[in-house]
Length: 309
Image 1 (cartoon, rainbow, N blue to C red):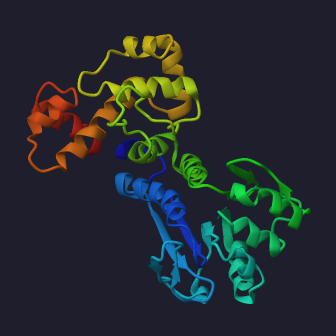
Image 2 (spheres, rainbow, N blue to C red):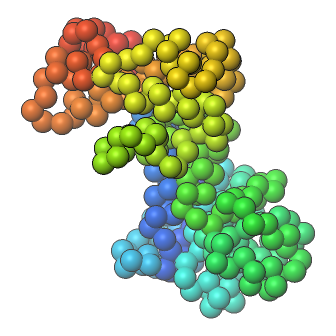
């Protein structure tokens, strides 16, 4: 929630280096969680799009992205996110790409996604370090760069160097960065926006779907129960029992993992659903209140004011 975020005023400057034939999916998974924290909490997060030749690049699906400014005007950043593309083999020996990779020297931390690790390894930045990339390239990568400790994992963190392959891994890596920089409550908001919606087509499945909203399975069971009972909220003892936890254990897990009490987390989840409904035409506030477990439109309004000002 906006007023609960202790580091909302902390600045995060991101340089976003895109290569030809980059993945739109990876770009969205890395930057959209940051956008949620910026928009929902007013966090001071900005990003600048850069390209190796200072020219428009095209994603693997053909969407064009122009750079915001030339590389020569790129300043230092807290986080450099680089997304390699399908032409990584030819890009790796391009002098312009080598020059673009010098941006890593002005970055507090680096995320290299998809084939980004290949470009860094070719330029010598990953010598002796642990790294990963898209799973289809792992064997070739390890054979091509024996000086890099290739790891078969969704993502790898080695000091300020972070590497990942798939979109799912990129999303989790972005959420971990949000937690580190802005706290667990900010991570919860970003995850709730993209990962925590119930599957309407198969309501019998867990409310959070097959993609875990949180790596702790015991906490995830409690979150599943909350998400499945928005219109008629369960009491916290019922949530704990359904998740196979004691009330005390559930409270401890929420405080340790999310820095929120279970009750506040549950309320936040219901308010997030209410805000989504209020953006839809044709629903009154009273109807939305009933859909999200509030006794009246007035009680919903009070809860929204307390949470979001």
